[in-house]
Image (tube, rainbow, N blue to C red):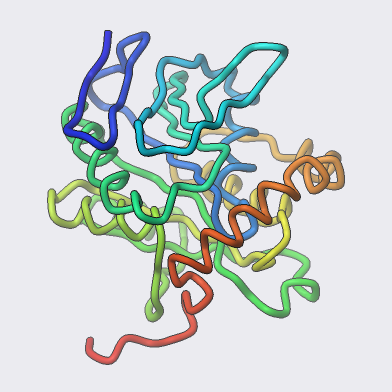
Length: 253
């Protein structure tokens, strides 16, 4: 069945997503590709099933191939109490606001208990950081309580741009609880180490064991496979002003 949003973004459910008490995890191409690397690992580790995709006539005509099967690059998975939204291509900059709105409206209709986005914070000295630190941006009392329980430091000052910023803003407008987990990351290179750090924090947040050893073992393979996507993402990030992300403190509290 399909759930159609107002154009330009449609969310299509080939198998209906669970309607209550789900965690919704979102992994999109962003700084260091942290979100998509982490999401891909989560899909494999939890053996999640593909249940739908996000479509638009305004998306570029791109498909991806996995095991010889044609796939939409914007896909939805489900399993183990988690609904996961992942993309293998950057969100077109001109559609970022509509994308965030459509995704959060859909999440709200599913009565999800919490949204979790996985991403990176660009740090220039990442090469000298052995264990990337993970920070969080939370909205809602539930998110705040989870941060405290899991011992995740809040990101106190900074700026966010792109799809995650749009999703956060739409959640704020609709009072949807959300927690954005952000690992220190290489700004312009795929960063499996940061993805592992964000997954270790996610494991504490959702109280579910997530083994990340494979990410370290396959780090070089992951970097090679994702370098072209990192280039595409870098171009999109420049268009969205993400080069200034976290560099400029807000003028007003």
